[in-house]
Length: 230
Image: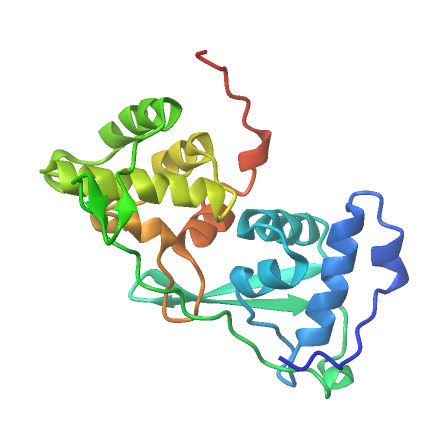
């Protein structure tokens, strides 16, 4: 994407002690992407790719700016589901950003299915790390019995999704546990969240569901203190 457009950071953002330096820089990126309608609808994956950080870090910066009232975040709902996100910069005339661009994160590739045999497409057998296995044992009971995997192959797919959330998107198993706990208390998602694979999938607007849940259900997730069982 051509990024030859300008950005700015107003004084009330530059000198706001509540914001981290990266959140201030991120504010500038939002202003650069704000389109003629006065909002930015880029996905967390898009921002994460630019800044070489995890989508979870992007969620944290958004929360910082939102809590400090520098941006307004609105969600588009489709039959009570979050189908899109719009970020508006507060106090800025939308006509200022005539050079802005609309953007969406890229569509994620299909999640690969791994067999439990010794090799899969010339790949060595996947051995589940013990800590990941232990985390999975705590997360699995959160799902209603009817949605739990019924065979070893599906269990392995779920475990690999849990590992993917940690390595690719910055959500540790403990973060996933908190997010799922809150999601299953939500009237809609308690009936419609049926698999760990849902968390790594993208909605129609290119936003990953784990990011939606983190921002809407657990915005203070980094404040949770976890006691190690090691």
